Image (cartoon, rainbow, N blue to C red):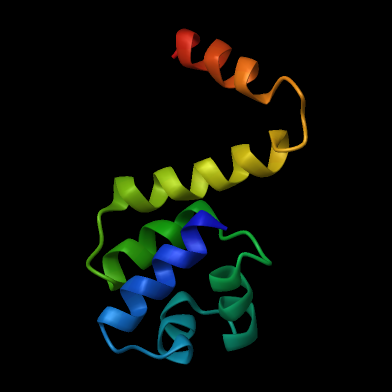
Length: 91
């Protein structure tokens, strides 16, 4: 979700095609497209490789990747904000 949008922005800035990045990640283009659209989760290793390929900050992309996972897990929970505050205090 969050990661896919940023990947697309970075890819467009570099004038790269999805198939070029998919080949570098050793996945097929439809799978890469799903990652970019947020229909499929990227693996941590793929996120790190994308940062390298797109000359992006690894921490930024990992933050977006993790934020997307957390959001998907708690988005419909009435106590979502409380959960985030609790975790924030524990970190």
